Length: 419
Image 1 (cartoon, helix red, strand yellow):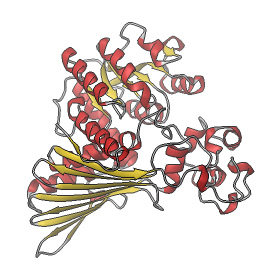
Image 2 (spheres, helix red, strand yellow; image 1 turned 120 degrees about the vertical axis):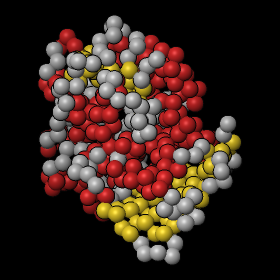
Image 3 (cartoon, helix red, strand yellow; image 1 turned 90 degrees about the vertical axis):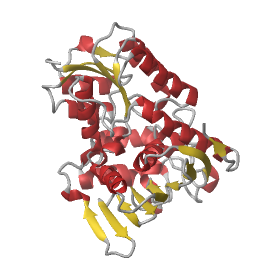
């Protein structure tokens, strides 16, 4: 392709505008945003100013944009989870290539249908499993493939969601309620199901799972708590105090995220207004959340290897850790510290400092930018599909595993067989 790839963006929030659009704007010779859609007029106007697209190319919803003839080569779908299926299907039928935020869809049948439509129409679809694109996980995969720890027998992975992130995204925020998004193990952890299967290069045979919403419930509210943090008698001692987190942290760090989710282009005045009346000012014990706050998943792989995965809100800090046990050695991997300890049996340990392997660790450890650039190059015809690329064909398995885990959880840990 001897011209910039044209791009339409559906959803101008944290991912669509603040992440992917800003990455695309750094590569004008390869990609140009020509249209955008969002139901929030303020975010849509912010997108127009950021990209310079005309008002005529701004649409009040993804559906309005998809009602037009095809506007671009590529569409980014960064809308809420429950919108992905219908919008992706409409875009594929218009022959857009797609960069699709995870999850693909909330049901197994819908995931498979979108995969089949993409294949039938010859469209390229990448699902945003950004962990595959990080230097951290690519180095782990390289070490496993090298044979330094022998055959993988067991993996133990923990996603430390962190107490404040749980409160922000999964109690007060957009992913708090399964009916509005999807089950926690799909919406948050299909990332993890994908990366664990990818690292060892094996398929999953069967799944079991336990977990529940144990803490962020009305019956666990401390005595004296109010329904909103700004009118709460115990706000000073509560670790989930929204005023302290959003306003005080905004002044202390100057960071935009996650404050820009609470109020677009946040200021103290906007944040105060949002916390007074909006969803992010609610007490974590008095919300309409129903997704779990902790869950364990057990996988048996096709060769008998096992995987244990834990997702938990109850950690002081966020991040992912992974232990890989092999027949000849062990890996211990800490994504927050960006270190991988290689422990061959009977030999000296070696600690790999991943920070020395790359310069960009912004946005999911550098995965966001690498994913966007790799997919743009693929759509432009400059590269083929790499081993990293999370095509929809490869991504569906992670969704099926996550959905099987949820089925098991809802049935008391019953073993679920995967075809």
